[in-house]
Length: 113
Length: 114
Image (tube, rainbow over all chains, first blue to last red):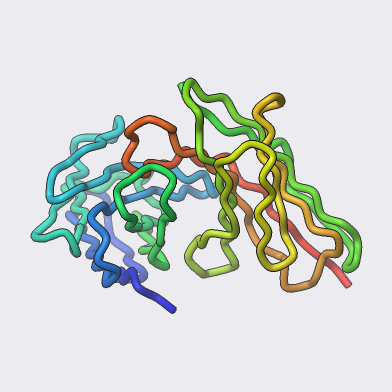
């Protein structure tokens, strides 16, 4: 059953626009993540949040920013989208310690035209 | 740095034949290894994981053995089913305080045909 919820599932927008993706988990986990899955299906971590603090910030462009109100929510904002941002953005959560399972949402597909 | 290599991008099999998807890794620390499976238009989900040398976890007929000597964690199944068609990712979690961050391989698309 789904326990990581993402909205919207699909979004088409023009270059330069701002986009936000929302994510909520109901598992009581203390760590949440955003991954990017590109057209070749490569999965790359973008951010992870633990107890509302950013603990991993990979080399993503500055137009991307994570936003969290509490440990159950982690949103992703893209300030001015570019064509290479077209991808599926996957939210995930886990208990914080290494070796624990990641639970993924179904993804938010972004198409930039 | 840590990395995971999956050599096959696409594997096509006839139903009933054995499955073997390769996974090798590089890691500075003692890692945890995982296999995730993603069916079409679904979320990736954990298939199995292992973090003890020579232990063999099993799930849904799949199994994998972590061999630190060869830095491998190959996924196997004795008989492929049509429902096994999916994208399979091998992933590594650093043994140090990486707070669950995973490094994913490039993925192997498995197609099982009748």
